[in-house]
Length: 84
Image (cartoon, rainbow, N blue to C red; front, side):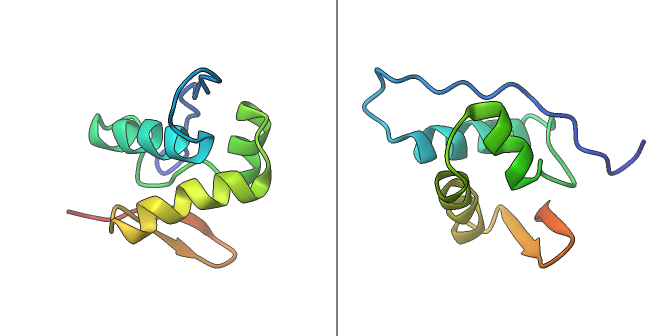
């Protein structure tokens, strides 16, 4: 179905020097750049369930993408990939 998001596995490496929120942001960014994500990103709840991370950690990862201009959030609708 167009516009529906397919969850791409996100793996957290506990041995990585990067914080989990950075790992999530990096993997989401890579998925966006490769075309696996878009136009809608997975919901925060879907990402929380998949990764086992706290909601705040996932929100922080999404916040990185928003700060970079890669994504934007529409309250009540979700997080979307910015058109380039």
